[in-house]
Image 1 (cartoon, one colour):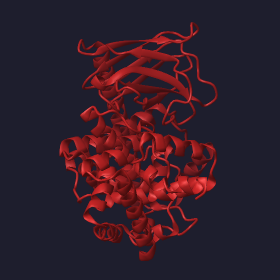
Image 2 (cartoon, each protein chain N blue to C red):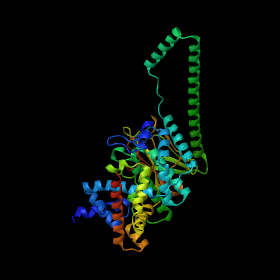
Image 3 (cartoon, rainbow over the protein chains, first blue to last red):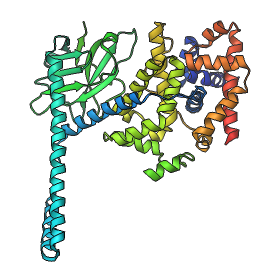
Image 4 (cartoon, rainbow over the protein chains, first blue to last red):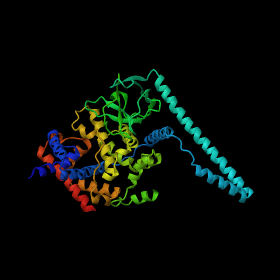
Length: 263
Length: 199
């Protein structure tokens, strides 16, 4: 049996996570050496192993979980929309609207004109409602930030910079309301890169857990609110911030710029 | 998209087609709450069933399922549809998260932490993967695994649902290590052959 065949026999157990440490290390070294056959076999084995999930007895999560999740993603989606600059109506569209209005004036009956007015009024009302909802959402988030920053139950986490050129940051973690990280005089990340917050678990060897991303404004300020941290404070040893590619990363790709120990 | 979703209830996409799941995940990058809702409704039962089987406690399982779907929402870019189908990727993510939770809870020394904390590598679906819809797939996988010797099936379940290694399984079942290795490898190969035959 060739060397590659011996490793090939380990692939399914590796995908299952059942190899003992020594065998696992030797197979990983073989894969790292670039064996294309084993790499392809591993991809298929991972799929095969995933099919074992269907052995689990079927169960249904509660509606409460669904509601909680949807509430969280709606809040985060709104926050993301508020962070984007509002789009303007193109010039040509104003021209089209004007032409349409003229046409209506010349051709429509009194009923059509009335319907138009009603539609316009409804549109304005809807726009006002949407604007109000956005403002309410923004206000709610601002209130949440304010409570996290001022509540004596929040834990203050000073975040020291690894470089003297970087300002110190401060994070506040409220067990129920989330995390706020505030920064001033923060240099803009290069290109479209972003700053990303990480939770460093207490578990020995635990990998950083990815959290929210932020870019400072033109004045170098930012306020990052994490409504639903991916882990709790008791399980977290420290917070860290790195610079990552647009859209963030699953694991840090650069050294932390700021680190703050908890407790 | 609605038509695509209806189509997906039959069989998976043909080679070169983009699956409905991949379209929905892509929409998450634009913070599309509706796409998230559809993904949750399509897959939450399967994910929850798996996590509950591993953790054996409904409240904890729901916490972990919440983490999994929030990770998907916040980090949808980590799934690359060109490298493999979505559901095996999601199930691998769910299993890793649940096993991590299990290990943390029992304060057991992490045995393969390098694998479990990372987002899963995408699993490549062989050709026959497209042919089975989920209901048929569940029945087929259960029938094939039910055809194994009880101890052989038990060994695979201990590895998959409890994250045990060959040595730990041998100790648990009081069987020789070599026997356990053969059981697991041969059992998985039979499952693979059976799924190929089913297509």
